[in-house]
Length: 108
Image (cartoon, rainbow, N blue to C red; front, side):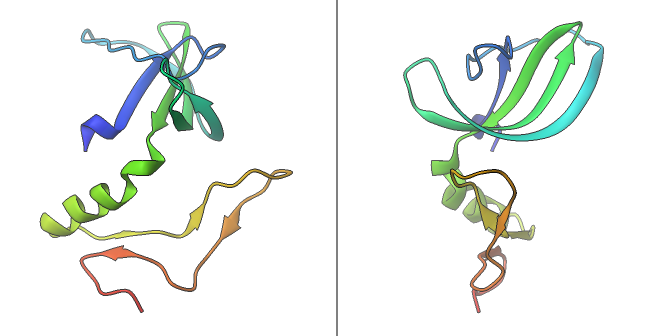
């Protein structure tokens, strides 16, 4: 599952892979939901924004990997629910609580 997450350096140009091994000071940690692109142009969704040792960073996920993540969670006995989707629009959140996929359970 770790392969689906990328810490990206420089919030001004999101989705550039960057890894830091040494302990760091994290501040200004907050949720965001913003479409961005990685270095080869593949879409990612930024889900968290933060500063690590003063440098702006984001946590980005690959939306195409959702089915794989749900399958891995089910295999390990963990539960996860799909409660909505990220869509272009004027802001806000779209929840689809009808037919949700839950790892470890059959869909309704």
